[in-house]
Length: 164
Ligand SMILES: Nc1c(NC[C@H](O)[C@H](O)[C@H](O)CO)[nH]c(=O)[nH]c1=O
Ligand SMILES: CC(=O)[C@@H](O)COP(=O)(O)O
Image 1 (cartoon, protein in one colour):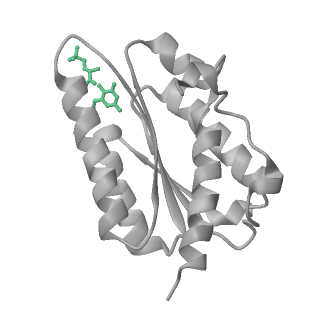
Image 2 (cartoon, helix red, strand yellow; image 1 turned 135 degrees about the horizontal axis):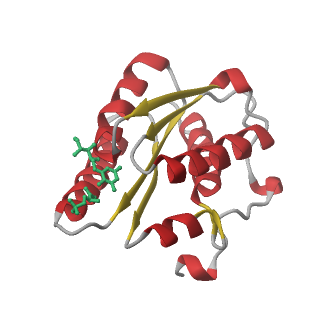
Image 3 (cartoon, protein in one colour; image 1 turned 135 degrees about the vertical axis):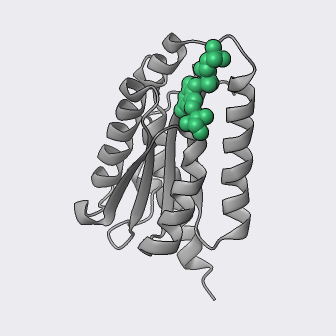
């Protein structure tokens, strides 16, 4: 199902685990900050709406999306979080740089999910133009930050339920 057929902001609190005791790290890229701030606001609001305590949300900024991987890795190692949300917005330019940044971040975040004990949520917009980013960070398609926050709560709960 493409995003245009699914509003990214929709969630049913009855299907979401109790998040009161969970601690979340959020790493935010400063590139396209008008967009990433909108994604962060959506994620923060959804976490609080689902019962996460404000003091249990740790935010770090990084220069660009490529640095999200290192920021998330350091968040895991130093902050005792139950889940990390990475927030970035990559918009296609004139060159192949877009493809390499997107692939590098995708693979890096996948690696963190398989190599560490903490789930890392992929809230990275990879858009052809700014309008697509606006539409997905609080515009007509909703807010991918909200989607990421709900995924983070569910993954933190899965991690706790499967702890050995
Ligand atoms: N063009 C975009 C970038 N580029 C910067 C890289 O992410 C990285 O910070 C740089 O290559 C130094 O390592 N980053 C975005 O987040 N979005 C873009 O559209
Ligand atoms: C994703 C990028 O780094 C890209 O926006 C940079 O633009 P350009 O490819 O025109 O240098």
